[in-house]
Amino acid sequence: MQPVWNWFAELHDRTGINLTIFYDAFDRHRFAEGFVTTVELAAVCIVLSVAIGVIGAWLQGSRLRLLRLAVYWYIQFFRNTPPLVQLYFFYFGVGSFLKISGPGGLAQPLVSNMTWAILSLSFYAGAFNVEIFRSGIEAVPRATIEAAEALGYSRLGADRQIMLPLAFRICLPALNNNLVNLVKATTLAYAISVPEMLWVSNQIWSDELNVPEMMSVLLICYVGLVGVLVFAMGRWEKAIRVPGIGLTARTR
Image (cartoon, rainbow, N blue to C red; front, side, top):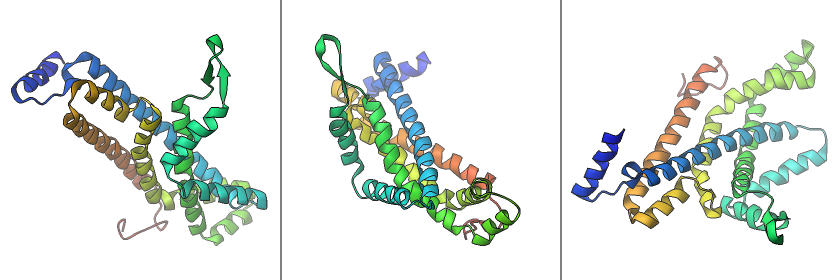
C-alpha cells in the first residue's frame, strides 16, 4: 500500500489537497480506530434497540396495567425529547451520581462515556422501534393467532413462532428507516468525547488545518456505512418475504 500513500503525499504537494489520513501513518491509524469505534457503536446500538423494540411491543399487550404504563411513559420520554439532551442527561446527570473513588481519592466515573452513548442511543431508537413493532403486531390478522391457538399453541408460543415472525416481516421497511437514522445519530457521541469518526476527524483537522478534506471524507464514510446497512436490510427483506404478507406496490 505504500505506493498509494505516496500518491496522496504527491497529490498534496501538487494541489494542496491535504488528506493526511492516507499518507501520514499517525493520522491514518487514529482515523481507522475512529471508524472502527463508529461501526462498533452502531452495531451494538442496532442490536440493543431492536431487542428493546421487541420486548416493549410485547409488553404493550400485557395484562398488567403497570407494565403497559411503564412502556407508554418510556416511549413518551424518549420520543419527545432531543437525543442530544438525553445523552447529556445520562452522562452529566445520572453519571454524576455513579462515581467511585480512584487513586489518590479522586472520583472516577463508574460508567464510561462509550457505555453512556450506547445506552442513550439504544433507548432513543428503541422507543421508536417499540411503536414500529407494535404496528407490525397489530397488522397480523387476529384470525391467524386464533388458528395457532386452535392448533394447541400457548399464547407465548403463538407470539414467538407465529405473530412475531409475521410482524417482523411487515414492519421491516419502517425498521430499516429507523436503523439508518440510528447510524447517523452515532455522531452525537462526539458531544461526550467518544472517539468515533467525527471526534477523531475534529482532532485531525485541528492539527492539520484540513477541514474541507476531512468533512468530505466523513460524508463519504457515512454514505458508505448507511449504504451497506440499506443494502443488507433490503436483501434480508427479500429473503424473508412471505407472499401475501405485507405486500406493497413497490414489491408487487
